[in-house]
Length: 108
Image 1 (cartoon, helix red, strand yellow):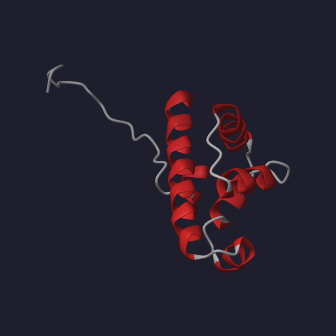
Image 2: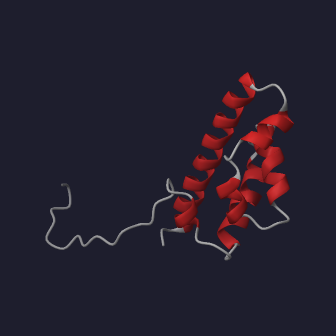
Image 3: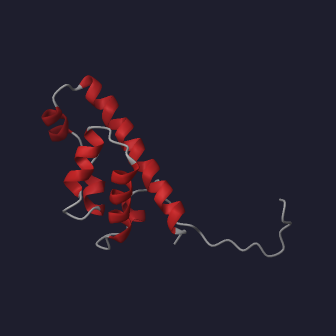
């Protein structure tokens, strides 16, 4: 597994990307309830988050709340949650593949 700070950065980037997608969608869809009924943007995230943190996540995304204190709690909950593998659910968060550096020039 990648080191924890790198995984945290990737998850934050994925959350911010989701926030951007939701904001674009809400510009055309004025009713939040209709948007939530029609969208599947949150489905993968629901698998990652514990039940207690999921509503906080949805509210933060819908309101485009990017405060570090809130995002860090969400990211920590995803990393600590063991009910599913985040790499299977979020394709943008990639597993680090083992790569041998044996025989390579250090500046190549």
